[in-house]
Length: 164
Image 1 (spheres, rainbow, N blue to C red):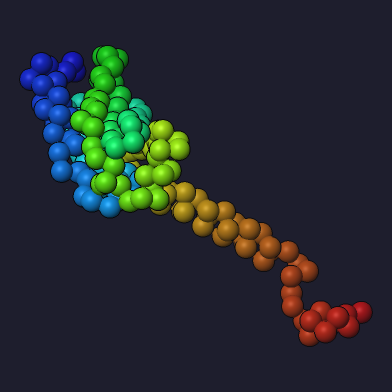
Image 2 (image 1 turned 60 degrees about the vertical axis):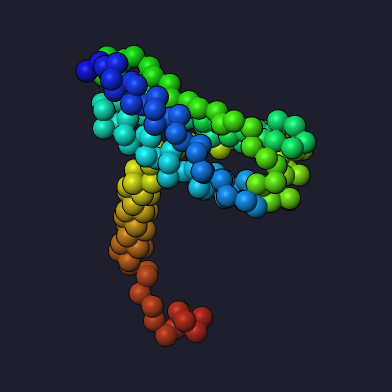
């Protein structure tokens, strides 16, 4: 299924609105990324609902000058026909006063702080639950194997170290 022009325009409009009212005063770098995450997940889900498969992306906070920074993201999607789509946006420069002083010093020193954009939390939770089930199954196998050994019987002599 190829993506039609109307769907592409919807993606563009969603992306344009992304940075409006995202940041509140005195936020840390991590808090900015945390606040952006649900909105990024929403863009991914909306595009997946249109038949696109999310591949990868990144969210960046970039130092501009002593008084300003910008926010930027880019995400990549692929349709069933194998055509790639990029959803990206960069904010207008924002005042450094919006970032907590310690985080501002960090951003000023690093110039760019980048976070990978993973799949929405629902997918991550499913993956984590599957991993937890696999770990639990491995533990059960180890316990069962250990319990099947003949010399696992606990006797008073073994506990006291007086076994003959």
